[in-house]
Amino acid sequence: MKIEIIKCLQDNYSYLIIDELTNEACVIDPSEANPIISYCEKNDIKPKYILNTHHHFDHVGGNQEIKNKYSSIILGFVGDKDRIPGIDLLLEDQQIWKAGNFKTKISHIPGHTRGHISYYFINEKIIFTGDTLFSLGCGKIFEGTYDEMYESLNKFKNLPLDTKIYCGHEYTLQNSKFCIEHDPSNQKLIDKIVEIKKKINNGTPTLPSTLKDELECNIFLRANDIKSFTKLRDLKDNF
Image (cartoon, rainbow, N blue to C red):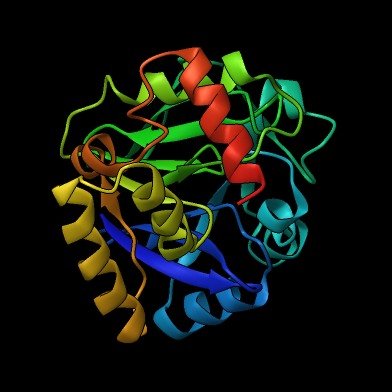
């Protein structure tokens, strides 16, 4: 499998996970259609499936246009069946979805929204976390509760340490400024910030991250209890 990062809108990332044997692909969170269609046309890729992590427009905005052009099948959480445009297949928590050579485990991770899910591609050890887990950050709590977001983040800790994390936005540098303010003696974080700045200066994405990096550097994953997590989330909202 090949992962292609597609820049969309201002700071969104959509992704293609491409089966190089068939040139079929899953599109993760198409913010807008044109960049994805352009890549697919240039590289003879068929986006057979669209996988949405949640219903926000900057993650589903390209659904219908891509579906209309390629007859793509749209997947999303059963609880968001009325909020995801063009949805065809309804997914449930802990479900394993398989199609061709694609195999992914669904986890319901509410907090940012009520119906947010992640997609963990088991064979490749990669996860698409949408707007729940960012590199060095986590999503704002719009519809859920602090407890839900804290528990959702804790679910990621059960994955293999070398799991590659692909999230919904290029927020890493800004997130690092908050982390270092509250964890200034963390040498792993200091080193990671150096690498982040190199990537930004080179015009390359800071993603994927790894679970190991996030456990060592992400202040939200390092929170030991709901009280400290809540305090950090409130501080980040006003950072």
